[in-house]
Image (cartoon, rainbow, N blue to C red; front, side):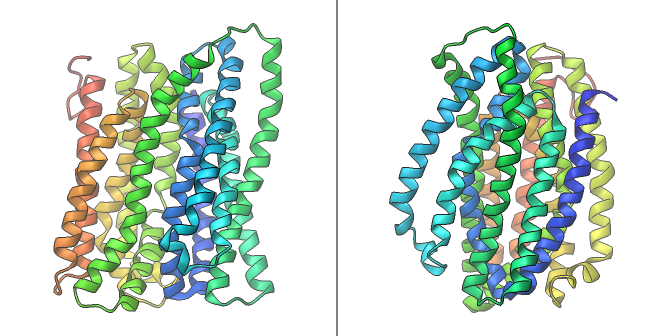
Length: 440
């Protein structure tokens, strides 16, 4: 079994088990928080993830790409300078966050301790990013798989323990939900760094090539900054989306309470179920970034074409059965969360949104490997702008309401996939039907 399939298999198995646990995590949260509390939880989560993105500086991507493209003799020097960069960015972000977060209006609706949980996350994510990027670059996907699975196990255990042992009001229950999230990240950080220390020190016994800090920072930031920009864009738009959808539904004639509940059903139930298979796409992304980077650096275009064909076929093989299954069993699946007929309807209508996102994620890995992260950002900008415009136009209409919101979400996913796919095909040197043309 080659490295690509072996690494993907590790990640897929661990991610499948992790997604099963995530399913139970969301079930517990839905039952403990209720529809209104779930809406508040889903509304704050994108903002928390925005801080996570800033803290990581997308170093896992840039480090894995650099490790895959360069000889082992350069690795220690690269990692040393990457650590200095991570510590500097971590300190700067912590200072900025501490000074600004008390003035962010959204946090005023939540328990005051939640803002400090966000601050605690920064050093945890920043430092674990180095180890994660190193193992990705070496194609040691087993450690990445274990860390991803471990995060879900710890969060589930903490949720079960705390909610079984104590009874909380909605505000305190939201705090506990985020405490379990941070606690799981702490455990993952400890695991990754314990696994990272031994190979890092063993590099001292290997022949070494010294790289200047300026050169390393230049190469890392050339990938990290546009990748972070892309992640920030997604995080910002995801943070805006709950308030856009709720606001649009209010304009359509619903009360703010009902609009928040409907968004909670959409995000906490329909999207949770529909995105269940997305762990396969993320597994492809993790393995493809170093694999595509190395193949592109070696100008191995036949290998790139083969990878694109394989990933496209495999995405069809799991994506189509998944959306068909969700459509036929929408009612029993959604009733595991809430007794809500609207959740089943949303799940059925969102099938294009789910299916096309299964393709977007591995296609983005190709763009990163090609060094076309700016193209990915421009694609996301255009698709999101079009999607949000349609959400507003259709969702604010009293006749469509949430159905109009879903129309906009579906169109955004389709447009983004098509733009990614055309760009990857041109760069790989194949036609849109994946037949060979010329290499560029």
